[in-house]
Image 1: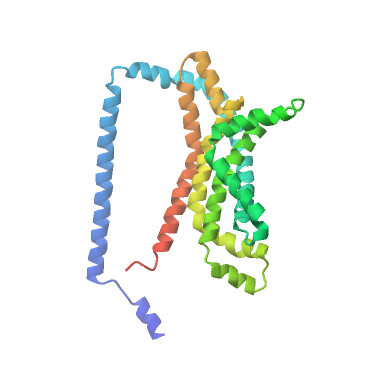
Image 2: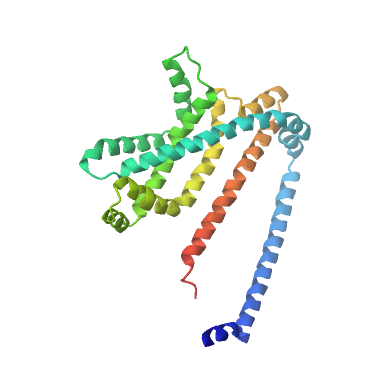
Length: 288
């Protein structure tokens, strides 16, 4: 009871109050300096661009409001195709990458064929450019049976899944190997099978260790879904290309780029937030 009363009656000392005030002043000063430097930099950069001799031509070719207004509905309609491909590719990548990571973590000589298969898969598709994989999948799979038409969106989803499942699998495997072996031994000593040990003990801890890296991979995948346009899909990129060909103006490409940035921005900010939160959590206990 006495300890509780002493805790409730505690007040910071004058020295602590001075320190807090000094930190607030330093924070306000830093914000003010950052604001002034940003305004100065923006003014100098804007002056350099606007005073360029070819700025008027560039403005008409890349930042034409009328062209942007006319092309926006078609590009937005094409972006919806990119979003659908991204949704299904994300699910497929999560499943395939988890299976690959588990296969590479199997112990014992009897599982060597599976480990070799997973290793060869990740080595192959991490080395191939996404564009080449899309060409091979988009024109190779339909050639196996020309009588059956396969949607370009499906082919694009397969190509994106093949490439990014290799990257995500390696990130997951690194997280699984970062889990201390004593965790596996303790789980097996409690009677858990190998599958339950992975599902209940190893993979949850591995995910927490590699969340920022995984989120960065999915941010990158959000951009690369625009590559399905090379297969003939009328997505945002192809819609912008059609509008550019009909108007001889590059503004539709700028519109498509801004839409992709808007689509990726929430995930980018979420990635930064999660990374900062995890870094702050790791530093707790070391602060004096």
